Length: 411
Length: 130
Image 1 (cartoon, chains in turn blue, cyan):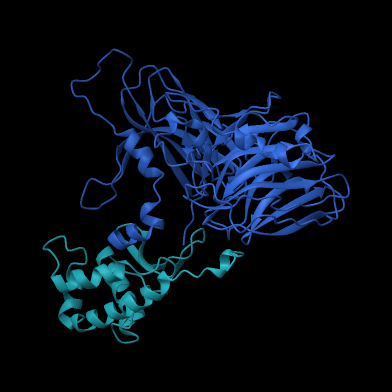
Image 2 (cartoon, rainbow over the protein chains, first blue to last red):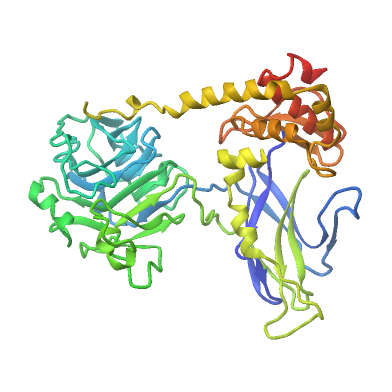
């Protein structure tokens, strides 16, 4: 069965004559490929109709470029830049978070500063229904500690402390956890109180060099969640990454609101909620140290937090109780490939449907886009409305392929 | 009992799905007649005239089969050559069922229909290859 070879996309669906349009191209096959600007006349290959028709645009620039293989990172996550390596926490750290895993059996990162290529850093993960603390020094190998704390779809895990210190790293899983049945209004403690586990790890974490991960394969530097390992986590109201040895009462301080004193960083997912909603991808570090994060692939924000008491039903009215985010394993808002070329649309190009044709050997792809008239200038007697929002929405729809309901209707 | 391991919690819906599937197959078996197969072969989409109620019932059920391992019509060369493909688990490439090739989408869709009925035991073994 054939698989897609060379392929690409452009940075927006509409462009005016004289404007520049960026293209992003990937191919699993190395070698040169040719580009050509074509006007799309008829796309349906049904032999009962006129068949496929396109016209090369005379005078448009043609090019030949070398193909590269580009990678798309699926899944929502947050990336935090850490160029100085302070979050590598070589002297140890304590993690404090609230977590509700909706896919506990899937391997996924929760909080990490990890470089897969070097095997260096630290990561708190979920594997096979349990929290796993991973530390790697980049030399002697990777140490893993599977905790007894089970995560499940029906529980919110809160207040867990996960520590590692120096070469003699320890994992303390679920230190003073406050696990509660999800959607319970009461603040009742569950039967999970006091789950502590101390164990030595064979390696201490070392800092992977460089800046925060940019979503490329094998680079997970900086702090991320869920999507870095392509899995889903419904994750926490707050995440604190603090110095080792914080007293338990201080770990509870984020639950009462406000920043955690002495923390390396403290991400409050509710901090970006305003009366007008959440208008940016920014994640605020309320510690004052400036480790602000950026959402990748649009995780859902304004979710009911671990402390939601059911009295307020709109997240803008009570941000403190809506500090949770939901990370989906398959969400995608931008492939974030490296730019391959920029095409300047000829100034006299008539409006219509066009494509940049990519030809590599036998493989062909056409990246479609629409040329619209110059601003405030009608160039034809008939206006055609192209539903580009619908195209984008359905291009990213996975309902038919993956949902049982879609299959039952059309499968 | 303390909650310790999510794997301890079995998804009990599968018990009822198995019972539902068995009852549906039992109810649908008498509907699968040579006339119904002929109706599907002539117009798999029901685009010219609406399908009979019997065929609608059968199609509703076969559409709902699990995605992994489900057969589908694959356009190897659109409008020229069609094959029977098998969907695999998410993230895995589909495979081809066999070497058969069909000249039209209609023939391929009917072959897929027969394959699914055979998998459900609603037609005899080998009926889809006959």
